[in-house]
Image 1: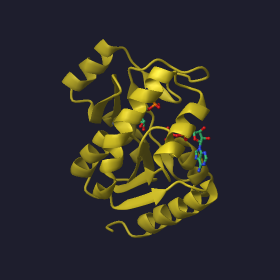
Image 2: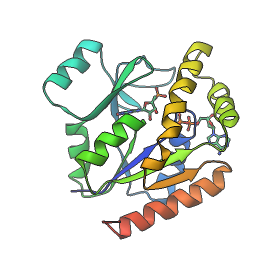
Image 3: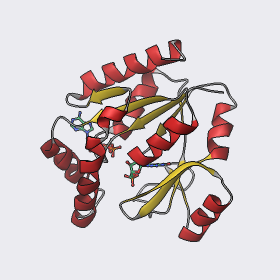
Length: 188
Ligand code: ADP
Ligand code: 5GP
């Protein structure tokens, strides 16, 4: 089984940005494409950023036990399809999951060897600025995500590794180091 690396933390903290930069330095690291019921943002394509599913399709996958983990987040569903993870894991290369906290807890319980990394913001103000600055979500969605972020920040201590994404270069360096060490020592 490939090593599974979970990158979690609140929306807007910089998970996607960090994973992109991490994968430039650890190119063997694959990225699992999640399923979601949220609408694609401009520029997002089905099967690339996400597998975009209807509510009925998603619920059917739950009924068939097709998800390794799934969760409701800000009124939408998100989940990791077992087939997606197995397909990537069959290469033997490590695979990253970029998921919210409830899903990260499920992976912790389901895959004991998974490396769990929580990305924290330097402050709540910085998190708000990043979410607003990204410009992908309207004001109501931003507020909803910030409300969820309060619960998520309270969960940081549950995760083996916490990296504060203050200066991006520092956070990338720390993340690369944690991932390289994790890959070198399977049971940490
Ligand atoms: P997430 O995937 O966690 O939702 P993103 O990677 O989309 O977060 O980042 C949210 C916004 O914050 C983006 O506009 C990104 O460019 C910006 N950002 C990421 N890391 C930093 C950082 N260290 N300092 C300032 N802005 C950042
Ligand atoms: P977004 O709508 O901004 O793409 O994602 C919203 C939140 O859902 C983010 O915290 C993201 O990490 C999380 N997410 C994305 N894919 C999955 C998944 O497969 N499972 C879970 N549990 N969360 C996910």
